[in-house]
Image (tube, rainbow, N blue to C red; front, side, top):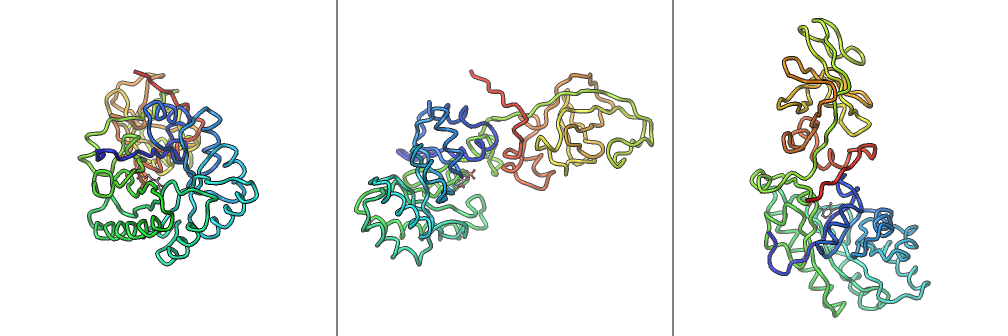
Length: 344
Ligand SMILES: *Cc1c(COP(=O)(O)O)cnc(C)c1O
């Protein structure tokens, strides 16, 4: 989906959206992506310790992490004069020149970044320093997936282009410009600039149904049945007796709970799991380590596999039941859940 020569920055923050850290980064490195990005310095340090040598941008840099960032050759995002001052002082003291940094502009997200009114002063600061080298200038779109906000997106892009031009005049050298996340890659091809920041799409998820159809399922969350019980009509299941069997029923207890990141909102029939070709509802409250399913009428044995999400049951559907988005489900799967990788 990328225009020719557009570089790729892969977002591996938050444990690669829950799918693993160095395992994913390693594969991306093998396939020669241009850049990796993490949210916090610690995440970058982990990747370096695991032998990842790709350039890594750290989006939420803070002063107390400058030491490790230098030590591990991590590239900070400078998003305010506060962080710029602190970083400048830090590298002055360490006697380094041309340290790679990334300049973040706030063009409408209202989260991190220099604002339009800051650009003039920012340019002056950049013109007069050789302490760091601007590797890239970037911004983040607030609603790239939404047609209703396309005018807003275009406006963000316009502000971005204008600021980039001014910054280029100040630095006198080229840097990468990037603003597109997953949705923008396919919805706003003209906004791919020099590089894109691919996140959720890399993990097989897109908010657009047509694009979703073109993506392969990447992650499957599986568990197994630990016990099956017969309960009589009127009996209750689980904590606070929230699940009531309306007729004689069969209940399967599954090895996953809210401590694994299976939302408690899935309780009492809201959530369904996929088992032996059928969708079956949760009965009662989701527990910390276990969840009970009403498997009445479905052929199930103890030890059988249960799919919580995957090809058979899209994570987006689970997210809908949980009143959230796939990002939150994926990143919320706790470290207790073993990640297993299949190589072809
Ligand atoms: C997480 C993130 C992305 C990736 O967004 P997706 O919607 O997952 O593609 C891109 N840019 C920034 C700044 C981010 O924080």
